[in-house]
Length: 109
Image (cartoon, rainbow, N blue to C red):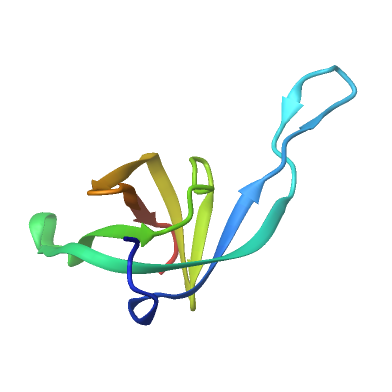
């Protein structure tokens, strides 16, 4: 059993395609966009008032039925852009892999 469709929506998966330069070195190339279904949830949120400034620290989680998410992919959810941090882990159910979860880092805002 996978995540129920009613709890998911379309997310944009950005996968970087590396290229080879004139010196035969691998360099970052362009991003290829595909649509996956999933959900981005906020895991934690905290305000830091140290050093006399206000800042926000938050943790994010991707839940998806898609096995194609790997680092250094990015996820676009509406106006937010996230980096995939580490390898997504499979969450097992009775009949095998139920869904995948990945830690995200907000890269805009």
